[in-house]
Image 1 (cartoon, rainbow, N blue to C red):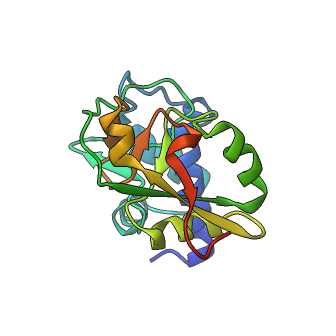
Image 2 (spheres, helix red, strand yellow):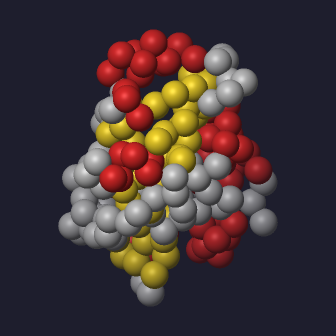
Length: 184
């Protein structure tokens, strides 16, 4: 069992490598973001004092299920800034989705909508509580935004859902957004 501080450090490194900079660990992702688990595990265990079992434990016990481990390969489930194809299929979303963000971001979002920024998609939550958890990771006050996903979908916007339940969209134009009651 890895101590909590080290586990967090290792998990952040794993996310960084699989989402943004595989070259930082001497790795190369395939077109869909997969890399050999053996190579990945070697990169992690050479940087941190952890074992293969520790790395697998971090993956399996992650409450956010950031990683997919299939056969002998691993990848991040979403949040990439490197170009990859997650091979996601468009699906009909729930009527309402949510997005948690810092209160200081709200004026720009109110003008321009939600943009994917350096990522491939805007990340959305199926419930208010998850959106609050996401929002609280940022410093200061936060706002939870309601996304009229049913209307967006009916007007031709595509939605995807990652294997860990995070809803994804290319963007969310401002006309589909409103602050959730009690968070602004």
